[in-house]
Image (cartoon, rainbow over all chains, first blue to last red; front, top):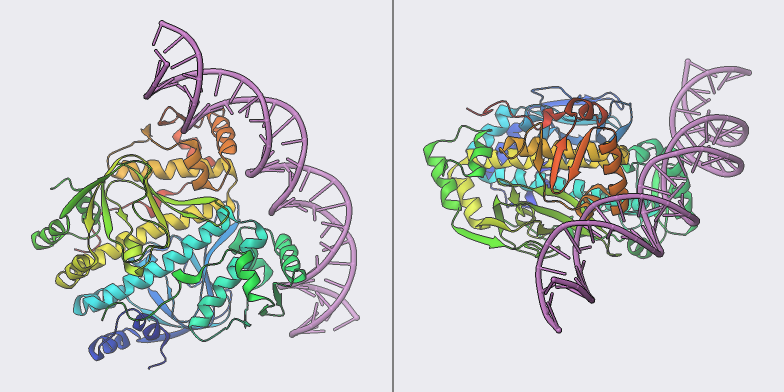
Length: 241
Length: 241
DNA sequence: CGCCTAGTTGAGGTAAGTCAATTCACGTGG
DNA sequence: CCACGTGAATTGACTTACCTCAACTAGGCG
């Protein structure tokens, strides 16, 4: 259980006691799998369960009336799925597995019960939620104020940073199951423009995204080009002894 | 103290006991004021205090290297300022008062101590943070997938909804101290385009924004035009007895 | 073999940006 | 009292980044 991704993530924030670890363990009751492409959570559903992603990639998104969609974030192992839906008692977004995924289901009552038993767990979850929000905010800045090439570069760097933290990537690159259509919906661009921008970045010798793999051809120069500052993702050590 | 805006907001989520209310009261130790335009929190600062906004408007934003800025959200009374900065031990954004504001300062240690005493308070704050995140997400969708006119309409409706909840607006309209420059930085547009879009909405008989006041000329039609769905902001009653 | 999905590229259209000039309200000092 | 400066709003002319439509390629799989 020491490799359990949520423990690793929360452990970076609070030094968890044995008692707290066992409370978290008891949250992982029901293990489930979902196939790529079939939504776990639908926009508008109420009283939903939350999940902890154990393996695979997912994305959370919103659909507009005219059928367009905006992907808000991608989730990788250790991330919560649908935590906000549970707390707000209504899902304001949908969640779709990008690949086949494994999750454990967490019931609201169990989660709130765990908070009552160990308040430090509540603090740790609040920290994790803040970190997620910081990523959404960075994404917002991306879309609002960076042009397509900077935006794409920044996004690929951020994803690399997150994956590196969980041992799934490095400054050399990482495996990435996203299609250009998914990228387009995440970046607020059209799929054809994503293609052009990827070509541009490749020809500039910055990054190459091909056959499900991202390769950083020049990490330093890309970082500068995309104005990327990873401090908000960096975690120095447990902040709460 | 019954009118204290944070109590009112959290009270919508959990039915607070006398003991919990007094814990919250004790958080409001130091009252401070800040003048419009002078930042409270700077991007990159560490170990910052958090604040609860008592009166006035503020905005949180990020500056890019080329000097452009993106406003992430506006804060109105009852909202936290810099809560994320405190939990992440590093501010990833700046906060500027839009008008002169009154706040109460909250120290991290006091907040975490309050969580330990009353876990339900932690849950309530997590709920408030989730609600904030939901607004950021909606803003992200705005910028990513709506054209300038829809975006502006949606934004003005959302602001109206939030203000109505705290008694500062209605379906007729509300007072709004934002300039077209602030709007531009929030919507990811240029100031001149904001001006054109406002004219367009006014001439279409949907909304009028003039002299610091927003008037909904046709609330229904604007709601439809902007694809606005307020459910994620609505609060039916205490969810946690 | 043929279909389907993902990716690639070209040609032409459009929403929004930039630059620039003008107005207006307001405050301040001569 | 008026000249002046400053910040916000307004409008026009021109540019550009990104979109749409459309055609074509390449791999995977029944």
